[in-house]
Image 1: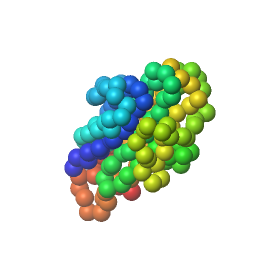
Image 2: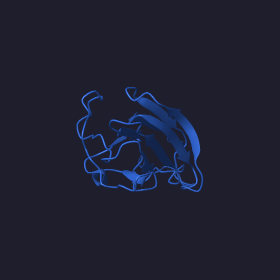
Image 3: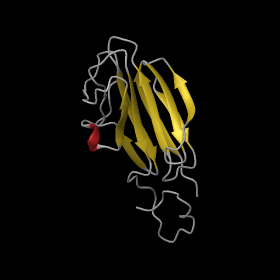
Length: 156
């Protein structure tokens, strides 16, 4: 059994998407870009409880922002207001400001219901947003499923 996750996000301005399959021991860059109006999509194959996604988002002035959605095993996980109400976390902030602001800049795409744009008050800074699949993410039912071993996330 292999479970895949589809992650869609916007980052104002530039981003690097990195995936770890060893619970944060090492990360591999899987995508990057610098066009904030574009909703970017990353597919992570073979997700296990040791899979972590980091989105490093860099603001180049005016205002920074990040919004994300993870679709995994029939569930949807958004960036939320407050961030702690969902499964995304703020892993690091280059300016050491971890106080988040939940606001939408007028030219950004509108969030979905229950979803929020996130940043701090800083500009010309970099924030790293994390989605840890081992942090209580629920996959499909294990009832009678012999493939639910080896660290695969498939049991509630």
